[in-house]
Image (cartoon, rainbow, N blue to C red):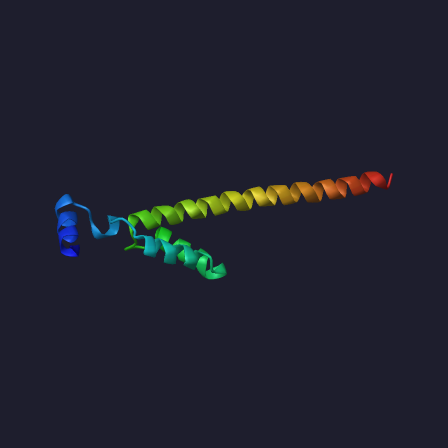
Length: 94
């Protein structure tokens, strides 16, 4: 059965870097990204390294973009809270 699928893929023009990612592969991928430093490094490898499945590369790029957006929003929120804390502390001394 696998041979038939491989032959169909070859005939349809689907390259090896464009095949659908299996459930097991996604499970391992998400598990690896949950490991603190290793996960971020692997996201960069999958996003910008060569020879990676196009679906996984696009997912890694989107995940990095969401992490960047979340980091910027967290810094803005943290800065606002710190500014409010020091601003209210200064007003209470007067």
